[in-house]
Image (cartoon, rainbow, N blue to C red; front, top):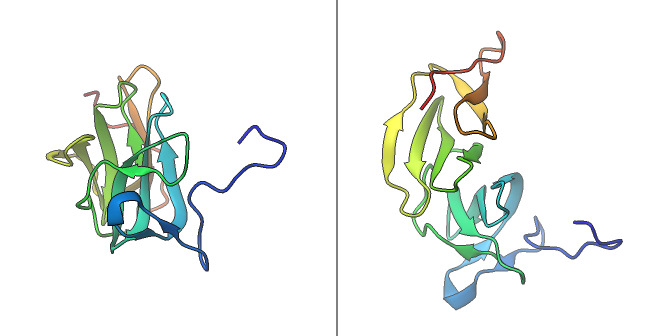
Amino acid sequence: MSDAEPEGYVVAKPVTTQLPNGAGQVKCVACHTVSRSGKKMIAYTEAGKKGEFVYDVTLSPPPTPVLTTEISTAKGFGTFRPDDQRVVATVGNLLAEFAADTGEKIANLPVTAGTNPDWSPTGALLAYSDKAGIRPRVPRSR
């Protein structure tokens, strides 16, 4: 990204990115978040199936899929805990927490309609947008 002429990493339509080892194609729709460490990315992509997936960010494109089954089938957004171990993602109108390396659901968060989650740098708080448009909210610490 800092290069004068950045190289495409995951590209959108009409060009698709081929994943390594025959894992399919990625059609990125730009709903992605890179972890603070720069090692992982969560994105809504069309990699064989449409959904939210976690990827290892590699020096050479394309990224390596960490989760080969989707966290969510809905278009949404995600955020990584600062240690890269957990991810919170939109699942329909809900926010849910998952293990970042296996996709195992940890818990649904007590949010009735949230999107665009962002974990604080300390990992103590999670901010998100209220889909009802009322105001930003911060759920209980985890």
